[in-house]
Amino acid sequence: MQYSRKAVLMAVVAVLVVTMMATGCGKKNQGGQGTPEVAVVVMEYEKVPVERELPGRTSAFLVAEVRPQVSGIIKKRLFTEGGDVKAGQSLYQIDPAPYQAAFDNASASLARAEANLPPLRSKAQRYKELVAIKAVSQQEFEDVTAAQMQAEADVKYWKAAVETARINLGYTNVNAPIAGRIGKSSVTVGALATANQPAAFTTIQQLDPVYVDVTQSSQDMLKLQRYMASGTLKGTAVNQAKVKLFLEDGTAYPQEGTLKFSDVTVDPSTGSFILRMVFPNPKGILLPGMYVRALVQQGIAEQAILVPQQGVSRDPKGNPYVLVVDPNSKVEQRMITADHAIGDKWLVTEGLKNGDRVIVEGLQRIRPGIPVKAVPFKPAAAQGDANPKIEPPKPAQPAQPAPKAK
Image (cartoon, rainbow, N blue to C red; front, side, top):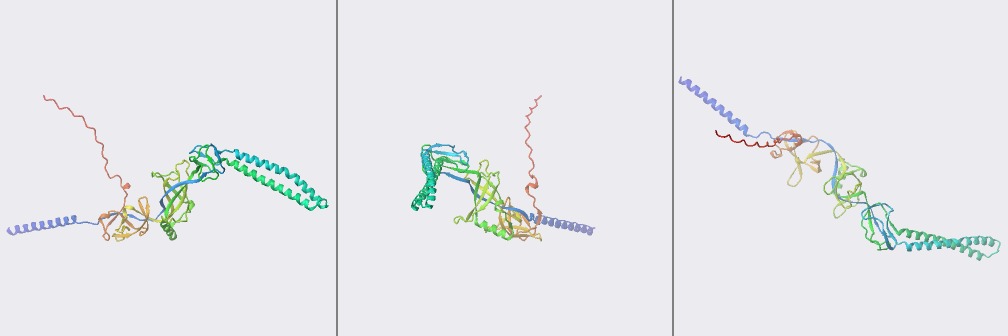
């Protein structure tokens, strides 16, 4: 009986020891850290336009400074400041009286010269016949011929004088050289106008379409040329490149523009050159001198790699890198070349290829070389609203009166 009790006691102790060991092992496994889970995005080649956002200013398509071409007193101003004018429209009237008199004088002199010419022609013709039969001397014939030629020259001279007087008389009407919007007038009625004076009467600007001149660094230009030479980037024709515009307040301009040309000279003080674009401006929204930002399409990347910005980190020197999951499910650090941002992604030109798995979530729990469990990345929009809906508070019920004591 005593031996059976010892056997039972030993069996109970063995069971307790096994149970305690199993419990301890379970707690140890629970307290240990398993393989971390990370969200990855698989890189795929994409065809994306390469765009640059460049600062610039607007300028008028045509600018004409209105100046007088004859001198005189201004009699009338025939336009409204700030309004639209048409090409050839009369703007100012200079006193035409002296120019009308000069025109009349030249016309009269021309008439006199033309009246003297027919008799001299007839006389020269008669002397030509007479000198042939020796009826007049050769000297007399030459004198008459010279008088005829002088009369013909007088007619040409006065014709030119009449034309000059007519032109000057026409210049007393100062007309608009181009169509557009006219500015303020710097002179008033009664002011003295001087021919070809340095100060303009007013300025006319054509505002539909308008030019937009933006600056781009020569370093970017060299980078684009290198990409195009290597085939990474496919260029577009200059006159076919479309441009989007953003105004000073950040709003998008509704009309799309066209890139016309790029300047061939680099400004040595800034290291940049000018790109000129043309934008339609039917409603007059764009005014000369406005600050704008242009989004210029400078080519198409046939095999582009786009990485979410949240997956790109930088080392102490500022060089960008990403963490990728290699074929052995281990973390690998990869240095990359991030060209520029496209939306919420970076355009990567070097360091990644098609099929690479870039880690975008769980970066705080990992380091290069450790094994991880990769799961597909789900953007916040695809995950749905994780926040539970909060029901509006119900209106408070009125307090019930306490029952009266019997």
